[in-house]
Image (cartoon, rainbow, N blue to C red; front, side, top):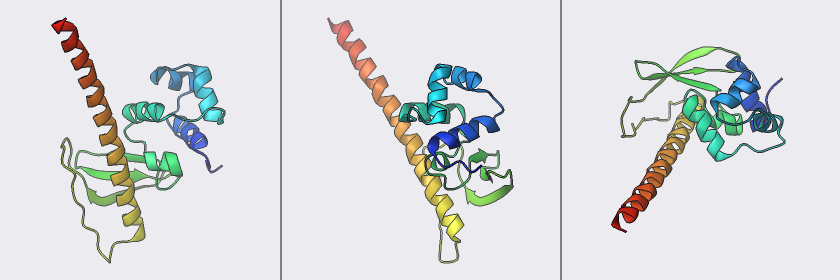
Length: 156
């Protein structure tokens, strides 16, 4: 069965981890009924839950999760080359190289000889990078608000 919805794709990913719904709920710090409702499509997958899943499973390709496009898993290896794993389990190395542990975004040159597959992967990579940076920014903003509250409380 090809997963057609975000809920089905999330369940497909969970099953690929060889964990049951209770274990998945526990690692996400939520209840099993809440996870079951999300996986069955009775409840939408929130951005917050998606961020928690990505934090726990950085190999999950969020573009695939949201749209079904691309590969389910993107695994980073020490050589900084991303290895993509398709739903069928086929692995292949990708020529795009990304720096590890850096705040700079690497520019990857694509040209008229680049395949549509390479172009789509670069789009997916950049979209996932933007999502990660957005989550980091939200975290910093929350920390800033908390710090301001503490400073205001100390002034009083």
